[in-house]
Image (cartoon, rainbow, N blue to C red; front, side, top):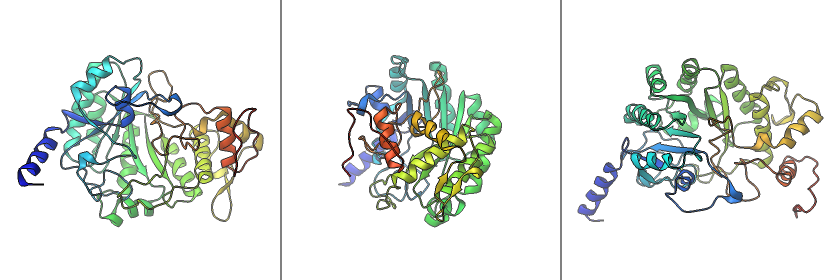
Length: 368
């Protein structure tokens, strides 16, 4: 690339920065008609996921993240949670949402670790709330957010806060997000910021994401989830999925039975059905009993609810931020269901967990 072309590229990138421009998840772009495509099994997204964007990118170096400063390439070209996030002008996004209000039940603005994103998050949130009566969540970067910023976010109209702790233990957090990768994040600050958000926004209006498959045991993840619940927060799960060219591009996906047990544990803890201290574990800290009767556990599994995507609800009380196929490819081995699992899905889930199952008549039969 010659010098003039390189300069033109940098100028174009700088021109498409927040607050005037935002990146949208591929699913959100499809929902707003900015990208063509169909969702597997007719899944629908009801939350428009937005991401702040700057030519200078994100200052964090998280080993598993597609937006990491350690991942090669221009920030605007980097995928995030496996998919492209095309950039679009905020005014165009607002116009498209206004013509699709029956589809949009929530908007989520995700920060990156860039100090410019504090002021811009407040401005964008306020503009969205003035444009229509759709609730707005914020996924924040505690490393750069102060308690005063949280107060400003609430005043701008945000009603929920997400803090992506991601790692179940302080050593794992430090290894993949902090000193281990030369990154700026600190586990204690993330917990402190979550506590501040719960205090300001109220119980169950702030919570944390966790990523399963980063080297944690099932006991460690259950204890982390219980800790957030005890603080007054909620939790959402992702299954690790490697981003190409990231530092963890060769890291394996967690085993399906491992993920399913943690999904079930999270659901039971967050629903207040049982505490993690009631679980029984084997010698490898895998959950072998959930502290309820076998009949009760079976009944919970058979609802399919523990295996649906957990996320912020829309104005109707149903999960709006269901991120279709964000942590697994579309297909029969969906990890987070963006819709209510059917009988055949539940039969497969039971098989994945090593539990007895009877496929409904006319359903698939596993060949393994």
